[in-house]
Image (cartoon, rainbow, N blue to C red; front, side, top):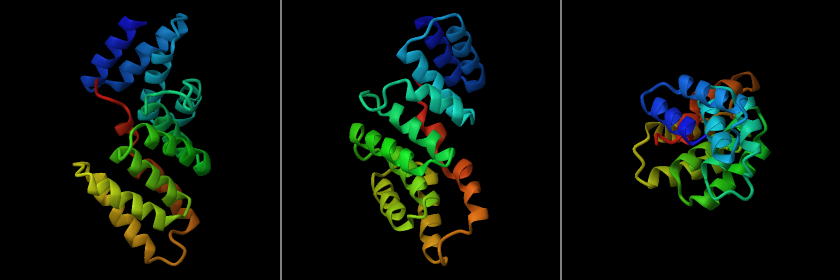
Length: 178
């Protein structure tokens, strides 16, 4: 398992997350399952856009008791992508308990609030994230979005909401470069 994880991290760092996930999937099929493998596999699945697989894997990684903020954060992003905002927000808040002030988690929680039509809460979270001095341009873009939505009657129309999740949720930020 250790060799598979190291190789997968190397591939991810080399810009080959799809290949990294294939290595982990192969290791799992061979019966080499453990918590680190499942977590890394789940985070890479999320980065590859497979929210359902990520949700299944990260839910097995004990998001309520883990000390790794990436587990509840990744699970929250997966759930938000699947449209389950209340569950997503619960896990993203847990990630903030583990990593207070983390601009990645603040951003993702804010996007879940936007999808849940809680624009005022989203705006406050994004202002906090921006105040951390983060160099992530999507935080500023999302703050602009939240501020623009406040001027819209009832926010975005229902037909426009699904487009926000894949474009504005920072799933790739959840996965460490290691």
